[in-house]
Length: 422
Figure 1 (tube, one colour):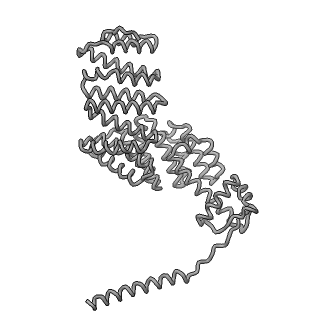
Figure 2 (cartoon, rainbow, N blue to C red):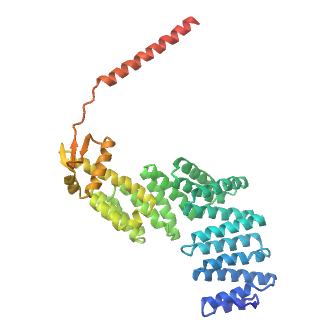
Figure 3 (tube, one colour):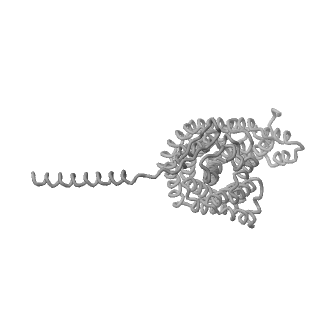
């Protein structure tokens, strides 16, 4: 990078655009920014140079350079309005976010920007960067730090009544509580986000986010029909914007269909006009699960989980529901297989169900402890012994009911005697 600066003119910008290599263009743009002129035209050209430079650095995956650029620009920010400063700062942070593998760098960058905004008393920008930081901390699984940051930020934003930012923060808090498995608080935060959103115009992408989170929470409560309608709304919003999150909304729609035993509808949704746009591993995974569920085949289920591990097991939402579905399918199959027997080898059951012996043995012991059936495992002989269902003696509940009625009579007599004595 040359130490001599260039004039802040459109010719310099054009020269950078015509440069043969990105490194040459970056060098030219840095030299434009070194120009000490603070004339209005020069400032406008520098703003254009910053935009072009951050785009080039992003394309070249130079995240550290973007971070140092933001620090170098601080004297320049004193010359331009606060709104433009906020736009440039958030633009550079977003450019860093587009470079893969920079989550730690993004967190440190946001923390530096927050410190600078506090010192400069730039409240509007600080609140938005803090919201971004909380989201990054959540993605990094630093939940306690993210929650502490959000709790203070929510109080501050509510006082200012900034509805649009409040929607973002409440939605983020809902996702955070859901990650911590605190469903009541997640629902309360989502309700707060919806309330704030109803008072203003919310961009379609943000409305899609709200619908997606609503669907996830309803699915967690096993209300799959309502969840499906929310996922459908989110899919329509993201599909119209050509947002990559559309495929995840569609994937969760298919999950809801499978969970309510309507696996036959999955192929129809995928082959629809909207579904064909997103054909790929995500939808292939759900199609394989739907086929396994339709045939009640645990072997096909296991194959789908193995072949589409990234799409099924590494997606926490899908994994949670499919684990529950797998357990239910396994229990139903085992109960059907052991029904004719009073004593049967575990190896024979494993052969019938086409699963490893140790896996079947572990599940049978769990089912016995959960009182799904009466029996015991004879591990010495490698057999399962099934007992007849013990007949419940009717005398015990009748006796308990009689004692309860006697207690009520004694209580009423005591109340009467107390009134007479008074």
